[in-house]
Image (cartoon, rainbow, N blue to C red; front, side, top):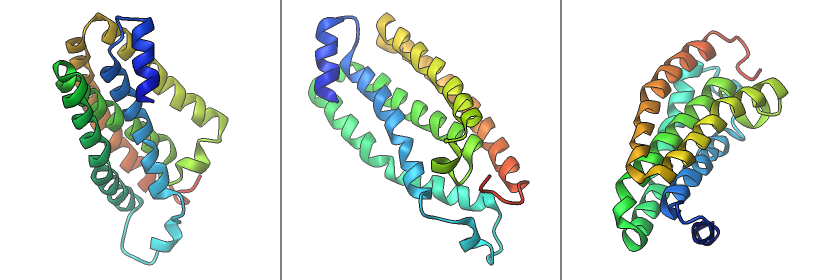
Length: 176
């Protein structure tokens, strides 16, 4: 992926490879939440005094822990290749990753692999994500520090996460 984005930067010089890579890495890292929930059934936890939001929070804690790996990789790559855009790239990665996983949790709960196959849910997911990604690409062309606008995604994500917990705690069968 890095080679492809670097080659794209040669064709369109205004695109910064590290910024685009951090954007793509943020998108891809949200799939770790899918992996963490892939084979779990909430029924396995039903006998425990837990709410659905408790299980989601534990999955998000694991997600945050696993997100250290792409963060460190991006940090090392940035130091080696393009240190002048390292800070904006790291912030883009963190904000996009957090925003995307929050949208995923809100729309799909503990079953993203299953619920994203629902046409309406997938359309809502795409409509929540694609404009943000296009906006980021445009901002990256304008300059790396314009991407600090991504920090505005964090309060939106926190709000959406709170709504997610209330939503999924109110669902009797959290699978659908």
